Length: 380
Image 1 (spheres, rainbow, N blue to C red):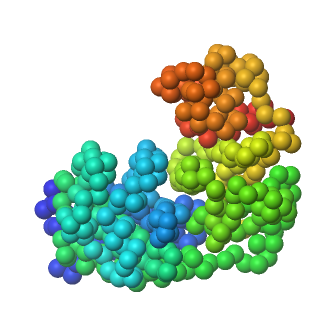
Image 2 (cartoon, rainbow, N blue to C red):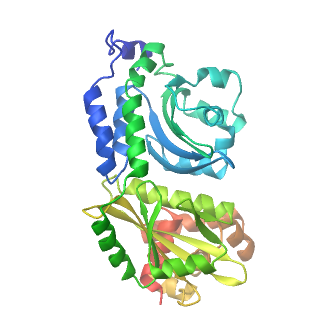
Image 3 (cartoon, rainbow, N blue to C red):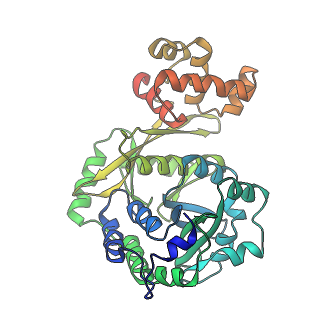
């Protein structure tokens, strides 16, 4: 669609199509299992964008701590995190220095500072042209950033389109403020806490902003004795940057899955420890109910107290070849594909080809889902 056809949809008053419905959807996000996903999808359509994100960003060291999005593929999020692209993002690096304000076009920022070869290549591959960005909230340590992207075919943002977006700013700011201070009724929190205490393993509940809101006694004890992970500002933090990125991908995947029509599959992250057996963190979505407005349940298994499945058991149960079962066994013990390649004296490309076959035979599509499936079936 050419940008000229878009401009014809705006009145002289610069009002977005279905503005009242957008605002209604925005406030409903406070009670929506998918958080702000539906609002972002609706906003993207209204402004003729291709994708939108609402990100909670730590200023230093620069990192995304939580994100809702619409229109972004999983491969992009994985690439963005794995390559620390936020450090090269012109909009983000400028936005973290700004107070809350109005919507702006990203074009002036890109023109005065190229993000970098990798980022330029991604933008070219996806025909990206412009972003409308808004600093919703800011503190000494964090910002909340709303962005809506456009492709070359959709054209750059014009001032009257930004003005139409700015009509939403007071409502967006108020809703984000409510989301950050919103708490469940005390009786509901007590009920949920009682349920979590019934879980035999260490357990934690994250709300749909990614904040830890509850932990059972086993969870509190685990955090006291484990140096490899911690909870700071109500968020999980890990010593390993690789594990931190994998954790973010896992909770994002589980949260995203809850917004779709496909059955939600648990994700499992293996957290390695020095001189000790690894921890297995399993993520399950929590649906909207009278106790919680969506979220994630995390349970943590100490592999020292449970017997993890062997390659022979995995091969027999899932009808895998011996070498495929060995790859599964290594994944369950916390090895990366690179580590497995070195251990098995094979190329990483060969290990990835084995993994593709494993996915096909087990009906999974992600490593975290595969590990969850293996542990659910064979953990003793």
